[in-house]
Length: 199
Image 1 (spheres, rainbow, N blue to C red):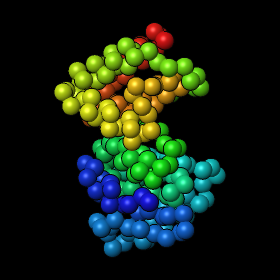
Image 2 (image 1 turned 45 degrees about the horizontal axis):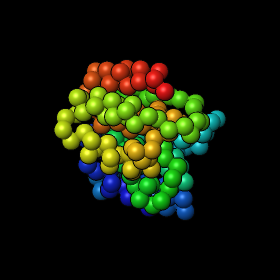
Image 3 (image 1 turned 90 degrees about the horizontal axis):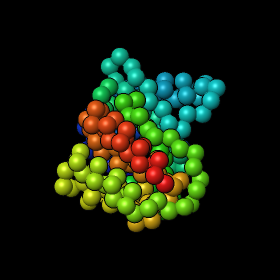
Image 4 (image 1 turned 135 degrees about the vertical axis):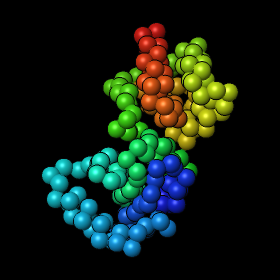
């Protein structure tokens, strides 16, 4: 079960609400007294939308609203404008993988250029390519990078020893989500995407 308190440690996160599949509302401890009024307004807007938004990132004058929908229900997370929503998705992936949910949401962020791929190939990626990718990542994050890589990929249901071609873009997005500096993140992705030409 998703716990709204799981998001408390993310820089820029202010408060949130979780509508579970049974329709119950769970508010974070930091929710303001007028939160029900605000959530009802957002709920009406979403209900009138002509399309489903499984993932949304809405910017307002004073805050940012992250919306996530899935088998766990609906999450509405109120954040500061510069919050990194990729970290929200990492926490969400970790929570869902602990429940044994193998369908993991992709990472998104308005400041985060997610790598997209339509490859469905189950061919394994050569180990030396994965090693080069981890070396690139270590240059950015430092000596703890490999420990983070193992933790984050396991949480996403990936095995670094057996990465398949279809998982390449997912792996890049998981690794890039750990890089807070936008310039360094983009440089990492630019270099990492070039590795794809070798398999």
